[in-house]
Image: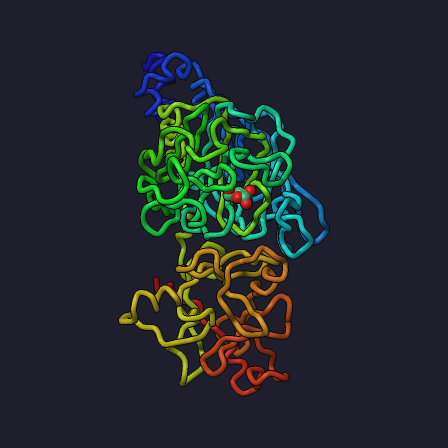
Length: 519
Ligand code: AHR
C-alpha cells in the first residue's frame, strides 16, 4: 500500500506541479492539499495568491465549483450562468449549446473565481470612442472560440476588434508600485497589430492617465511602440503609452515571435523590476523574454498602477486589437519563476486542444472542403478564397495543387455566428476570417464583432436544391443560397435582379458536396 504522503505527492504530480516540487516550493503544504490543483492553488502555495481568476474553460482552483461565465441569448435577452462539469473541472459547454440552440449568444460576464468579486463585464466607452454601435465595446460571440480541454468541449473568449471587458471597481488588485503577477492563455494564431489586445491592470478611469498607470499583458504584432525579433506576434507589457518588449520602447531582440496555437504568457512587476515570459500551453516550459529593471524613459518608475482590470482593450479603451482569451489570473505579490513554472506544468497537464479533429462533415469543429456539383464545368472545382484579394471563388483543386491552393479551399465548420443551429465557415489558413456575403458577393473577412457581420456569415444547411448534397441558405436573405456563377461565389435567388440570380443551372450551382478537407 502507498503511504499517504506518497499518494498525495503522486496526485500533485498528476496535477502538473512537477516543477514546483522539483524547486522544493510546495513540499510541505502541497502534500496536504486536494488531489486536483488549479493554477491559483499553486500561486497561493507560493505566497502570491490570485486576486482575480478568469476563465470560460475550466476551474482555476481545485475546489472551485461556481459559475465561470454568463451568456445572454438574442432570442429573448435572457441570461444563463455556465458552470463546471465537476468541482475543479472543465466548463459545462453543453449547457451553453442547449441554451443558445436556434439563436445566438454573447458572453456577458466572466466571473472571478478568486472570491474577490473582480468579475469582467462589458467595457464602456473610454477616451477612445469605441465601436460604431454606440460607443461601448461589443460582447464576445460565445461560440467563436470552440476548443477542448482534457477532452471536454469548452469555449474561449473571441475578441474581434471592438470587443472589450473591464472592471473599474476592483478589490485587492495591485495599485501604485505594488508587486503583482499575471498569466493568460491566448490563441497565438489570432492577433493583429491594432491597439490593444490586453489582459491585466489598467486605469480605473477608462482614460489614458499617463505613463506607468497600466501593467497588462499585450499580445499581437503592433510595432507602434515596441517589438521583438522576427515578424511577430509578441508578448509585450502594456505599461501605458507604450508596449514594452524589453527595458525600453523599440526593438528588443530577447522578445521572440511566439505563435503557439495555445500560448501561455506571463507578466510580473514590482518596484524597479518586471519580467515577461511565455511558452506553449500544450507542452514544455516557460522561457524568459525579459527580466530586469523598469523602463529608464520617464514615468514608469515607480509605477502608478490604478488597479482596474481590462480584457481585449487598451487602458483608454482603444479597441482595435484582436485575439482569443481562454484563462488568466492576476496575483497579489511578485510570483517566483518556480511558481510560474509550476503553473505552466498545471496548464500543460490540463490538455488544451483545438478540438477540430473530425473531418468531412457539416458538424461544428470539422474541417471540410466544398465541391461544386454543376456538370460538366465544375465538378472538380472547390469553394476557396483568393490570396490576392478577399473574393471567394471556385477553382479546380486536385492532389497536385499547391499547398496554398489546398488550404485556401479548406474550411472549418463553426456553429453559425448568428444562429447556432446554422453554420459559419472559418478559413483553415486565415484564422478568425469567415465566409460572408457583402453586396451579395462572397468574401473572406475578419469578424468585426458586429451583428451584421454575424448575419452575413451565417448559412443554414438544407438538402441540395438539385437533390444532391447540401445547399446553404443565407440567414438574413432566406431566398438566397450560396452559389457559384461564372466561377465567383455569391448568394443568389432562383431568378432575381442580379445577373447571378439567373435561373439557368441555379439548382446545381447552389448544391455542394461536403468533401474531405484538402488540407
Ligand atoms: O500603451 C499602449 C496604449 O496606449 C494603451 O493601451 C492605451 O491606453 C494608450 O492608447
